[in-house]
Structure formats: structure tokens, C-alpha cells
View 1 (spheres, rainbow, N blue to C red):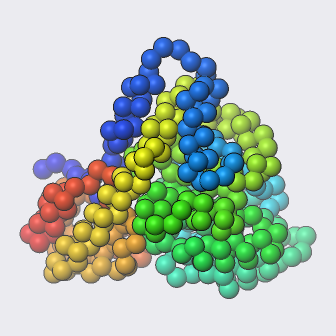
View 2 (tube, rainbow, N blue to C red):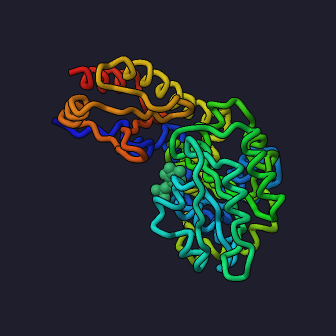
View 3 (tube, rainbow, N blue to C red):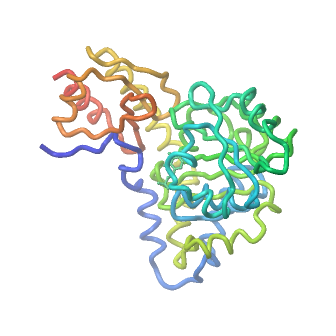
Length: 340
Ligand SMILES: *Cc1c(COP(=O)(O)O)cnc(C)c1O
């Protein structure tokens, strides 16, 4: 029996062919290091084009670094970041945001579907205003959420408006941002800075379009000295051309969106085919590239015995993620094994 990671996460997929070609093309001759090369400038220009604004762009090696360093640049050590209790920055980054900000505290709120709820968000922001409590400085939201859902543009605007009205800045963890854009048919600008987002961590890795994540500052003053943070954290690539070239390749002609759409389409197909299997109960609507299902012990055992790997967390449901690489035949095999 072989172990099958096809749906365990979108980071088990490979690098898309366009990105891989871009790496090979970038591998010729010599060029300036540490991001001073033309290819990196071109990738940043393409990001500015995609976002229709003059933003500051940095490439780092992973999403944890992107989030942690972005948050550190928005906070002093005595500040706090308010986020949903299921946020990756809280549950899956080993304290990196607190570490890189020298102690900024993370404050948790709850809300349905992994989304911030404005009423509880405001309660948390206002809970304490005295000198003895870490001052709320940032609201962080994840798009799509850790539960595979999407904030509408209006919901992002409402969160950002509330944050701004209390003097807080807005960070968006967009580890799967391409899936959100592809699913919503909304421009990247409308989903971010036009809705009040100050910093976006734009995921290139799970989407298969790069081996790096882009940290995008829509207010350049917030990016002051950010390169030093990256360097100190071991996140400044000397051969930056390989971090940036795949971005430049995939941001052209909507390649990044086509790959994200493949992931989203297959998630819908997976739900359609897995949902009716006896012992399977889909527990949330499929909005981007994730499918969550309660599995009976029999189905769970059949899938595990057939070698399928998947995570069960956030309420115990099994999570299946689709990627740029997912095919109909992957889905048919999983569903056949679930049926037994
Ligand atoms: C995967 C993921 C990240 C980044 O994780 P790394 O493993 O550090 O690249 C960040 N946020 C969310 C919501 C994620 O799913």
C-alpha cells in the first residue's frame, strides 16, 4: 500500500510547471544577489500591477515568517494582535509572531465559521484600555479562513472599518489568497487595500506558484526597515532570483488564478462525489479549496487502510484540500476507497 498525500494539504502538491520552468530560466549566468536583480524587480512590478497600486513587496521563505515579520512591523512589544481563535498565527506558528515582535500578545476572539465577528471583535478591542493591558494594535484575519470559508468584501470592509475606528491596523493572512480571488471573482485590490487591509501575506507556496510567500505593504510607511527584519530573521534570500522568478512567471496571463480555480473546482467536485457516500457527512459549504467532512469510523478506517492521509482537527472533521495538481482521477480513487 502506498501512502497518499494528495488531499492532506495543498502544500503536499508540487510546484506548477510554469514556476518550475521559471526556476530553470532563472538559472543562467550571474545576477545581483539579495533581491537587487531585474527579475525580482519585475516580480514586484507584476504584483503592483495585479493589485493596481504602488505597494511594497518582499519575498520570504514561508508563511510563518511572512505573518510573524509583517505583524512585528505593525506592533511594538507592548501591543496586541486580535484574531480569531482558529487563526494560524495562534495555533500553528509556534509563537513566531510573539517571538519576532518581542512579546506582542495575541488576543483571541470567537465567531462562526472561523471568521471574526464584529461584535466580539469590538468587545475584545475595548475590553481593557488601561496601562496594565497590552494595547490592541492590529486585527488579523485569514482569507480564506482556516475553515475553508470566505469573508465577503463587505465583511472585510466592516472588520477593517471597525479596526481603523479604534486606531488598529489590518493584517490579512492570505496563505490561500489565490483561491479566494479565484472563487470570488473580485479583484485583488477590492479584497485588500480598497477594503482597508494594510498588509497582506500572499501565499505562493500552497498555491504551487512559488517557493516563497510575498509580504505586501499597501502603506509604504509601515514597511520602514522591513528588509532589516527579514535579514535578521534569516528570511533574506541571497539567491533571491529563485524566490521571485516563479512569481513573475505565474502572475502573467492569469496563470496563478487558473491554478487556483483548478483547486477550487476540484474541491466542489470532491464534495459532490464524497458527500453522498454512506458514513460521510459534509460539515461546511465548499467555498474555496477545502472540504470538511465527518467520517464514520468505518469510512475513516477504509481510507486510512488505503493509505490516504488527512488531518482531523477543528471540531474533529476530516479536512481534504485540493490544489493546482488535483485531478478527477485523484477524487475518484478517494471516493472509491471511501465506499469500499
Ligand atoms: C499554511 C498556512 C500558513 C503558512 O504556513 P508555513 O508552513 O509557515 O508556510 C499561514 N497561514 C495559514 C492560514 C496557512 O494555512
